[in-house]
Length: 164
Image (cartoon, rainbow, N blue to C red; front, side, top):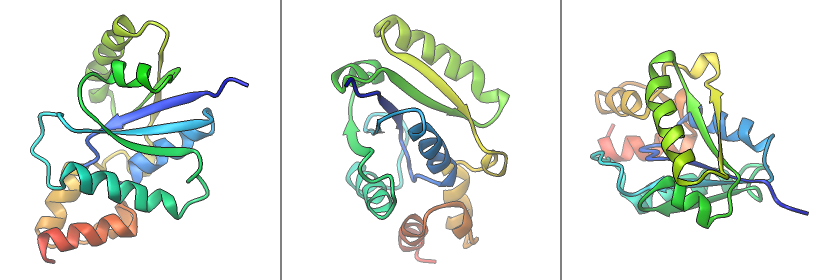
C-alpha cells in the first residue's frame, strides 16, 4: 500500500495551538505528516533550530498522533525537501485573506519545482485565527499569559526564555 505522506513546514518559533490544529486536521487526510522545521527562514528566531525541533517532538510524543508525526529540521527549498521525503502533499494553513497572496505564490512556485506534489490549504479554526508565533512571543515577553494558546511545554519554554 502506498503511504500518503505530507509535509507541513514552517519556522515554528514557537509552535502554537493554531499549528497543532492544522497538523491534527491534516492527519485526517494523510498517513504520515512530516513537520519540517525551517532552518533558513530569514527570521530572527527566539528558539534555536534544535530547541524548536525538540519542543515539537516533546509535544507530539504525548499524543495519540505520535506514530503519524515525524519532526525534522530542513534547510533549503521546501519543494525539494518534500520530494526527498516522498511526500504527495505540502500542507499549508491560512488564518486570513491576507495570507492568501503569499501562500498562493509559494504554492505555484512549489508546483513548478515539484509538479507531482499538491498543496492543500486548511483554514485556521476560528478561535486560532489571531494567533501567531510573533504575537505569542510579544505577549509572553511583556509578562502576559498566553498559556491557553500553546501546548504546556511551549508555554513553559517561553516563560523560561523571558524569565516570567
